[in-house]
Length: 102
Image (cartoon, rainbow, N blue to C red; front, side, top):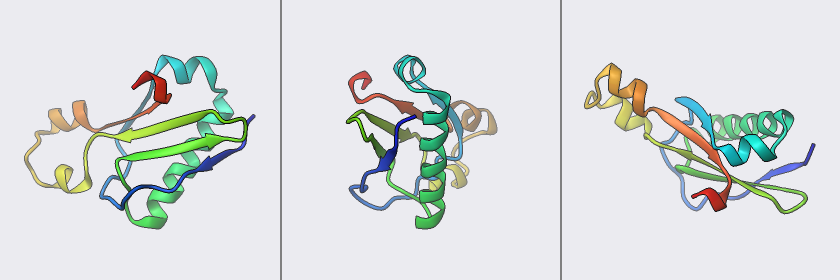
């Protein structure tokens, strides 16, 4: 298992990464379940500590590999009432991907 470091975010934000989590084929094929759990745990702890985060969070392994986590909806968007429950079900997603898959 690699050691994953959370890189500094570019700016603060209102994203909570609390929707449905999905991963790309690249993440599923190249990361171990332990790596995925480590990144997710660090991400969730950071978001709680910062009371929200930027939509893009970057993690880098000690071997140089990078993983991006991208959230779709800000907390304010979810609480605005502009989305129906069905739309929230569909669009409240955050994705773990490799940068080259973007």
